[in-house]
Length: 335
Image 1 (tube, one colour):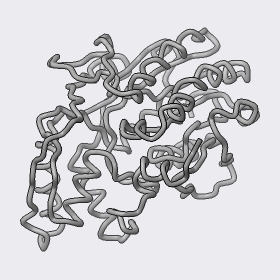
Image 2 (cartoon, one colour; image 1 turned 60 degrees about the vertical axis):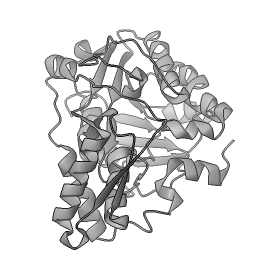
Image 3 (cartoon, one colour; image 1 turned 90 degrees about the vertical axis):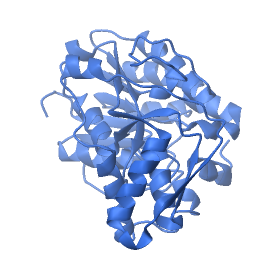
Image 4 (cartoon, helix red, strand yellow; image 1 turned 60 degrees about the horizontal axis):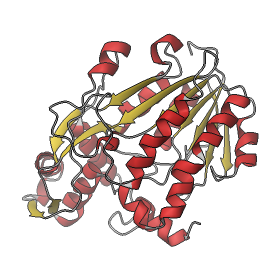
């Protein structure tokens, strides 16, 4: 570690990205606290430097206790992905927005020195701009991306020399995690190609930036080490490849057929979609200011998933609700 931080709390660290990020933080030598409801199960490997707390981000007294002694926060807790808001708008409002600023204030009062907030590139909604930069107006189409955008200024209200705040707007994440999600674009397409020999494209013309799960979690870890002056009060897009959903389907078809020749030919069918989010995200700022660029691509993500299928890592990947956020939240009837 190149910073003086010793103890990091990952709020919402029990999810898809958290299960990839936490082992990296431990490997770097941090003490790590994971604070999460663990709705989707806990597959984190026990470690002497890992403290796991099953808690609700809305439970401020419990969260304050978890923050004791922590130097840095990586905040990922939310009811994630847009369809989740069809479940219970009040639930999503309380988790994704109402408890956010109290969490920030509690972190600052606890002596936290750095706060990394994971927002979303979906805050841009629909844009015809050739490259959507961080200065682009936020045009959210759903409550999920609306609240992500509204939380950002709430964080920066509390920015100070002793409390360094930074916002990351990641592209749609893809690739393998021990807490797998099959409700994200590339992962969905790969799952269907492997299991059904058929990829259904909803719409197809929408542009969707993607980023490999290993790259985005590398970035979250690196943000604890980058000098404060480079990131204080800054917002960064973090994407890599901008393709249409139809292009993504073509990539997935090609790679799955290469990895599983017996499944060829995999068919692609297109159907209308009411999900019109479309934007071409620029990640030039993070490259220019931090020298950061992804090292992996969509092909790597699809091949990683194919490898996991070959190793039988998934249990009933088309139907197991654990792999689908909306289904799980419905099943547990979270209030």
